Amino acid sequence: MPGILPVMDRIWFALGALAGLGAVALSAAAAHLRLDAGATAALRDAVQMQGWHALALLVCGVRGGRWCNFAGTFFTLGLLAFCGAVYVRVFAVGIATSSVAPFGGVMLMVGWLMLLIAAFKRRR
Image (tube, rainbow, N blue to C red):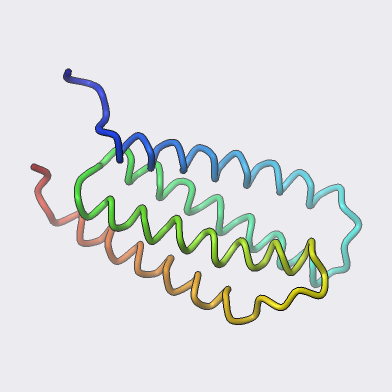
């Protein structure tokens, strides 16, 4: 049926919407929580990163195709690792996540590289 997105495109679109929802919710929480300055700054950075990558996931859902599937996978892994590590550090004080966040950051960069490749590939 024309007009219906393939399954993976719907998944990226849904994950982008969920990540955007989470970014807004966590942003609201950050505005009302009493955290020290360092935790507040880290939380805001992670929320901003989550918001930008929510949009990137939406692009993967709209554009679709093999390379966007790769990009969406890396964006999702990167969000879970990078933002997740920051959220755990802020909300679960005492849990060390220092090696997880850099891995997540690399995954996010690879996702952008995959999206760049998708820009020059034809969709089938």
